[in-house]
Amino acid sequence: MFVAICSGKPDVVEPFVEKVGPNYTFMGGCTALYWAVAEDQLEVARFLLSKGADTKKATPLLGITPLRLAQVEKNYKMVALLEEFGAKV
Image (cartoon, rainbow, N blue to C red; front, top):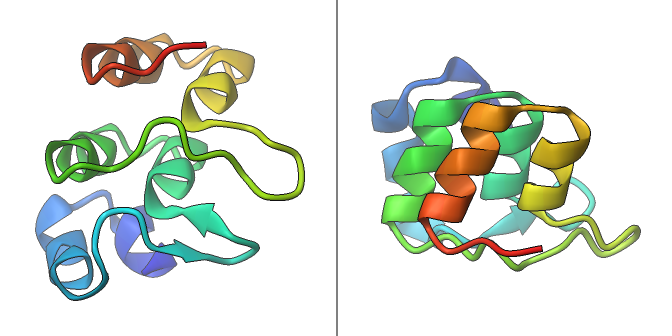
């Protein structure tokens, strides 16, 4: 799924989401949305959010949410998108 997210193409991610859901965790317990934010894949993040990805689900080890990650990375477009879908600090 990580490679699909990195492709930046929602249509490549869609089969995975259909099979395991938008809140599937992998690679250290991080969600697909977290990885989309980490890899600056705005359209993939938008797709995941439209499918119900949880903006509050934090990484298990450090407790970082996708919104916090976007803020730390100063990715203001991603912050705006996450807030549009209800993400709060």
